[in-house]
Image (cartoon, rainbow, N blue to C red; front, side, top):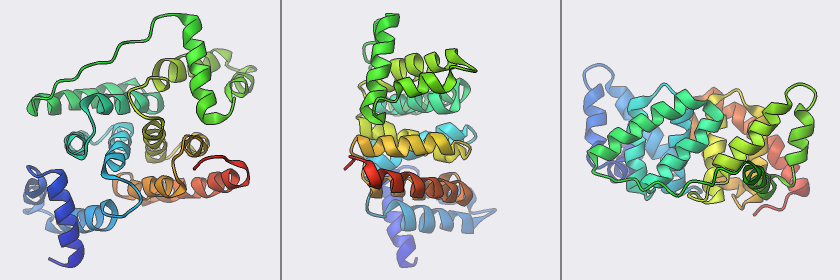
Length: 264
């Protein structure tokens, strides 16, 4: 019970009071050191770092595990931990919606199945927000407005970049990704960008999109420290290569932001 373990155990127990010991017990017969690593490194070294509030750490973790699509037990654990950290069930569903844009519908649907099980076990009720009106013109307006709020009038650039090969994809990005999903008002803009950064970093194959959303996060007031902490957290959930590659992308994106950005 070294200091790292004690610090991590206190954090894990506060976040998941009913599950902390179960994590250790499940590994005791085959890999007890893995249980110790989870507590010492995952929680003692990473989770307790300053710079990112528990609610935002759980936002990032739920997004990352949804995007990975291969960690249902851990996703269920962190959905429950997200509730403990202060996320509403509606916010958790919105994180999954946002991540679906990056990881696809199978990943989103599977994550919602996990969320349904956790909410049922905790007797939590979800109150879905009112849906957008099904007006195609309004979808484009919402999409352009949402994109402009974070990416400096980038809508025309999106259209131009795909005009020669897949103009319909540009429409899908503006109308669906931004108009239908990202423009929703359940999550604050900072939470949305933290979720998108975590999803892109965890997948490990989205450096251009990760750079876009690092800059967008700065535009909506996410600090450099919060962005870096989100990526450091990915070491525990997506592995060191994914975190290191994401940090390399962040170094460039934040450097460009420093030369002309207006984020906090």
